[in-house]
Length: 143
Image (cartoon, rainbow, N blue to C red; front, side, top):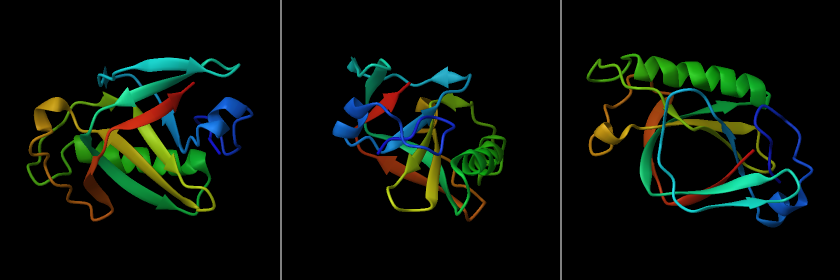
């Protein structure tokens, strides 16, 4: 099932369910990362975007609603980009912000894209709940 941004209920768009969408996007102001091919699917005109392999800074929030998990996760990651990292440097805010929702699981993985200038060597987080991960190329549905 797919979740709409800011929602805790699966989307009614059957085209998204057929594609096995597992990730919802919250788009915020900032420097949007580049993405490749895209197409529109379903009656809600959801957009399927292709993102290349890249590093993301992430945190996992357990046992909350998606809205509360997004709030808590956003602030943990915001502190990271505001200097709560080993280099104590501020990092530009980017979009999209993603929330990975796994079917049957109460965990939400909230992630910020690591800006291009830090992709080779992102500063390590000082908060033990925040981590850097490399994600393989992925297709993400956006509404």
